[in-house]
Image (cartoon, rainbow, N blue to C red; front, side, top):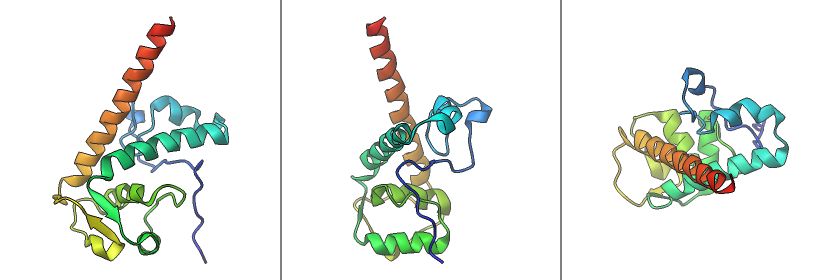
Length: 152
């Protein structure tokens, strides 16, 4: 039976929410705490806006490090391994899900249809990518606050 594929408006939740411990940005899905709390009240369009922003951040961070050489192979392997990912997003973002699920274990990227454009240490790449995503979120917060202070 084929696995249910996520839509662009599907929740990015990974079930490991760190906002319950006081984080402003979830270390799992990278959404702001207010987005997590309000998710069920958001329209489909609002959910897509959140996912589009997260997709943009992930692409920005990953595009200089990796290249997808075989999207179908990548998708099939993720499905086969039971790794949660959003089929409707750019396949480059699935790398984030792969690293999240495999932790620091070494991965044969070619087996997934991925080419590494730069050397990376499998023990640290996940943490590096996570830190960069959190920095992107913090910059977004700063930019929003700047715009609000100009309004008021």
